[in-house]
Length: 135
Image 1 (cartoon, rainbow, N blue to C red):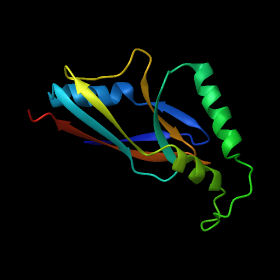
Image 2: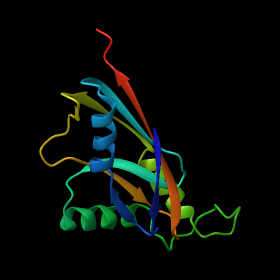
Image 3: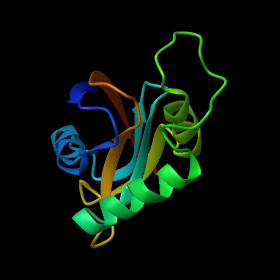
């Protein structure tokens, strides 16, 4: 299964928990693993508490690591997104989450979040593969 989302770029955080949860529920798989993959080199996936302060803290930390206005060698397309590629390399595009009782087995405060590091809005593709337990 795959779905597209529109992002705003510039640290746009998109909570995918509900959408992926719906896909799991519709699959009928009671136990297994969901593999979620974003098909882009300037986004990342993470699990985090979905709260404004946590979101700001994450953005601030990533900006310290790879500041948008830093000096980057990536200039192939002249699009000014070298920082986005560095951040994406540090925040993988894929994550695996167990499925239990036909639901994502997330902790109380865990949410599945896509982070768009690029410098402009884009349409992003997310692939969800559900692997049922075989035992």
